[in-house]
Image (tube, rainbow, N blue to C red; front, side, top):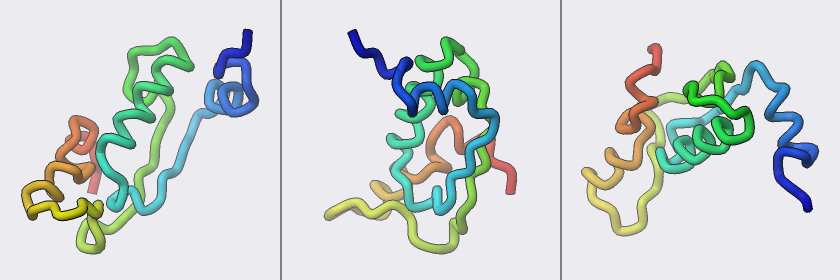
Amino acid sequence: MFHPQNGPIGKLLQDASLIMWDECTMSHRAHIEAVNRTLQDLRNSSAVMGGITFVFAGDFRQTLPVINRGTRADIIKACLKSSPYGLRLKH
């Protein structure tokens, strides 16, 4: 039976040591948290992002995630800086 770990993308992510995510400020925090859970599962690791070094690039003074009919508070809650991983960001 096919398992994502055995696929070409799964193998690529298992072997990766660095991932760069440009314009991360426009990504919803749920997407980044889903990538974290996926990498932890693929790499059988409880380390943040499965132990892969991530470089998040973006300008927090520019466009934040778009939340349809969302309030300013909804947008801030969706922002990477509101995620537990946002606390680890280096400016």
